[in-house]
Image (tube, rainbow, N blue to C red; front, top):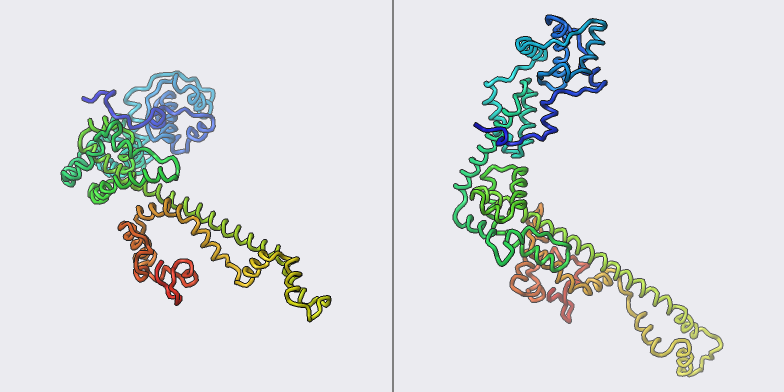
Length: 470
């Protein structure tokens, strides 16, 4: 027989007290629960003797508060008893007589009937066990299962059983779920999958592969993200196994996260000493969850570097544009003076051009004049061109930080035929061959990803202006 110390703890001490402990009313609660309706008061008044009537009023109030019955001594309910006497039996002499077992159970039966509740009986065990079996598939936490059982009992107006019965029901539901999963795992896990999971627990020097996988990146730096990609690559085959097998096990998302947390909580030594099916289950769930976490980390890193590089390129383009505007503004007064030579009446028409040129050099030195003339004779560089010049300046950082992330991640979209996804798949294939995009024929790149206004910055052209490559 299971002893009390061996039973599963399904409720905390506070939860047990809330459900099974004698109510401890304050003044407001006494007014709420011990102020009876005419029907309730009629039931209490039908009991033989003042002590039985007071006891019945208290039981009615306690039942309304907790939907449960209690055995109590008068010394435990002094304040509640005083409230009842002053409200319903003012001035009457009261003796603290004990209540007989027969009277206690009679009151329980009548009060339950008054509120439409059925007393707990063994006939409800099968229904409650079935409910526990369904609940454990959603969440294996003992407290959650117990809470759901109590909700079910309240909905069906059945007085809840004792805490021991709840413990046994929850324990059996958890044991049955473990047996169910163990049976399914033995069917779906082949030897290669077991070996792949087992390799996580093999020590390499002083650190197991699993322990290494548990370590989180400290930042989005290149080295940290390289380790994240390595860990994700390690888990990729296990993630494929988990993706194929977990749906067959019928494990809820909540339970999947819980089992994964156990693999994270236990040491490698602990996992080796558990039953093999438990270890496999925890590692499968861990592989699923951790792979997704690592993928999320890489996506976050990609977003971080994209934002940083975009901000820097925009700032660089803006700075270049402002600098160009400042240079042009600085040249404007001198250019104006140069132009005024053509309409200066003090310069006779027969004046040799060489003399005019010398006067121009006094306004602006020859080299400066030549540079200014060249700059003003061409169309000013557009903001878009300056933006792509800034991007070119960041090319090495893009190759170092962003390219590995785009190559590692399996990006998808709502439109599988999106030209951007096609272009990304093509680029990943090119990089996998250790080639540059410029080494591939331009026709391989989806044309829809090369907008007309950006082609001057994305493509190379021959002497005739025809595009030749990226």
